Image (tube, rainbow, N blue to C red; front, side, top):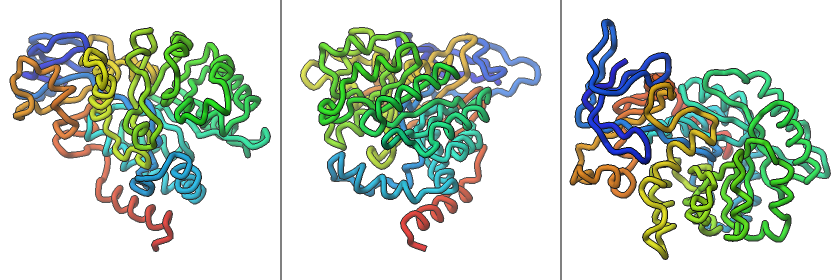
Length: 411
């Protein structure tokens, strides 16, 4: 495949050039002014911008089923009174269709991969596989007095079934230190070491968490394990240095953090100290959008609230692209030969991309996910000019409607 005639942003720190991009075997093969090879499919993308795709480093995709159920409640009411009772009623079919709607939303907004923590893992994986999207999938793990009802073994069984899949990466998902005992977290860490699986966990999202446990105890449990920390809102400046470990990533979720009243993470200080920060949306029950592009601009603006020099355009772009890829363990986030062909094509023939001399700035501060023309994962289009090549949209929407009716007993 040859993508011709577009402007190209190769990485967060590079300039924008007019280049062609050759794709083969799921990889970027070459960039430059290229002539088509015999039999090569050519896409004329004149008037478009090709850039690395976005990655959603923290979400609960099937929570599209609960979008809008608790818009104005504090965190504890949102979680314990609204969300958890509904989650008790979920089944695999509901999770499949809830996830599919989430993936259609994300694909149309330039997202090539996501980190998920939820239930009915095979149904989440099946949805990602049907869409053709990358996914790091974990089971939400909780215990009570050391008993977890077989959740960890369920997570490990899923990992055994899906390990080695082209697009699906299994992981382990302890929910949070306030829903997992320390002994249980140690069991999960031991399983992660034995299997080489990555781990993701909610940590220091709400202020009251500081009263219940010390984050150092949690980090010591998972030392040496590929760890994605979701939120990390409540870390002080002095504590941020503890997050600089090579195997540790932070998934920053600015919209969810604000909507649930949990505050603003010190992301600029994290980046300055060498913490690897990616972006997440959280689930649609707490955001309510799955728009990483929006999170990118909001993250930048929040850090500029008191100092406009903080979190520049390149940092914001890197969080949304390359750092998300790294957090997921993907060789992506840059348009270079040998990298995976995860790309987004943006329609820049719009007034808010003028003047074109400042195009990289416009991507962060005036563009939006509504400008996405196409999304490519592993060298294949999963969204192109308003269409989803791999799925039957009407069937998905009908299945989603049935799932919502059953979840809320409306049928």
